Image 1 (spheres, rainbow over the protein chains, first blue to last red):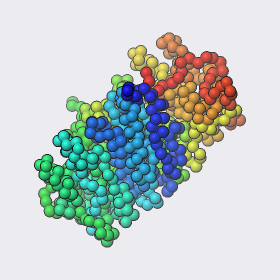
Image 2 (cartoon, each protein chain N blue to C red):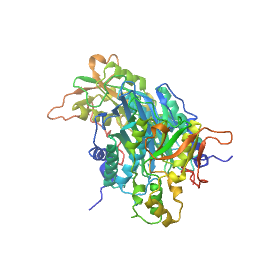
Image 3 (cartoon, each protein chain N blue to C red):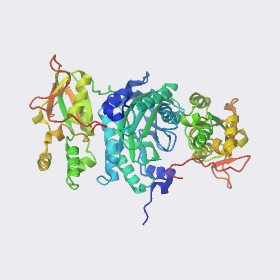
Image 4 (cartoon, one colour):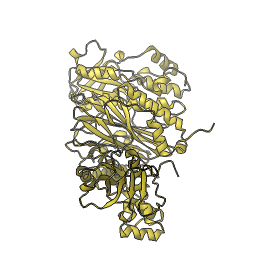
Length: 318
Length: 318
């Protein structure tokens, strides 16, 4: 049976194929098919963010299914919207792909984008498909702040405590497993697509968080952004960071410090937030916010250890 | 003097370099630097569209400057927003580029995006930079409908007249000139970056247009989308299409039918609109909208000729 490629479908055939798989919501006032989409923005503001995923860098087609890639591409953008304290409403997707790509790979991608968006009540409302030598997926997510101020990185206050929701280090551990050839290891799934704690993060926003960040570069790196933007120090307690037995076992198996994954790994899209101690309820704390001192500038440190190399990931640096 | 590449700058250096060149507006409630941007959407709705440009396909770096590419990338998205009758408010930009790309090329790109956005009072509010073998630029534009219904493709009415604002065929002629090695020909500029009639298009919306489309695939192709979506026939008058002496001369020089550019060329981002005849004022008319007949399905035809090959551009088809 011949494989149908995107060039067999042509641009309009491919678009029709994609849009036939999508669902909609009552936030979508005009969906795909016109020059632009129209999405409701009930409080008169819209939250917007864009991330780009490149084949061979952010995913590998031999490691991840098209559905996984779609879910991951959606998740990392939806997480950015949620980190502002907003409920995601819509995704737009730019797909640059080789003409030889199988059309059913694009079907899987569309399904993954749709399925992840549905987890938060959002929908794919538009996009573009073009041909390119390298498969490259750009996603824009929009969101609704529900009348609240945006939850920025710059409002952490000395005296706040630090909490985290979602998984930490599992995607990094999964990537290490995949690189070690352990493609069937359970943690590999965490690399293929994150399991994002959207509702727990929105609950933190509702509970009175002063700042929140999507952990995409690593906990220490991303809280470092919060510390600098807020002009505070953040002191973490390494022994209080979540560490599952599965992650500890995987670290031992590969001979790495599990903290390098938990404190330095991105791609799980956990959310780290600061909030006044009395609002933390029974959430486990991982650290606290302190005023800077003459001998201690804004940044992240550990109470109970000298940090290992957990600087986080930066593109273009090797 | 050594050229500074994007890998020399690193991700955060590159982002700082880009954001330092950007400007803002009172529509931007939170600009670059957090997990997401916040943009005002005063009437409770937001218009959103995404387009992707790929190096070697949508532009060539030996033919176009970085500033040209930035203006073009912004223009084609801003035009999609304006074609809905909306005023653009914000751009988000995803840049995938080789680590060896000169950082000052990215400066030029950012300047071009900023300058084109400023033409309509919009600003770049966010984005992402990642490394990739192929240079790929994805732009999302947001816009404000100012309390009006969106101007879709599906509401053209029999009895309407057809008008066009902006240039037609010049980008296609410019591309033909560039391909013929005539890199200094004045029309080559029209390929490098379109000159888009944003305000004239918004005036058409305000005047009571029933439908409007951004001409990106070619006049006949894009009006074909309007005809099918509206369930009407659109009859154009070839002799009434705008044709400058410069375009006629260029066509004669290259031995092509200028109508193939005017009716079949995209990339000028002209706007074609339908509106009731009594609202057309003194605008030049290029055709009229007719009801379909048993022997004439929705589509575009010419009153005064058998159309040449003006089917427009479709990606993935050669």
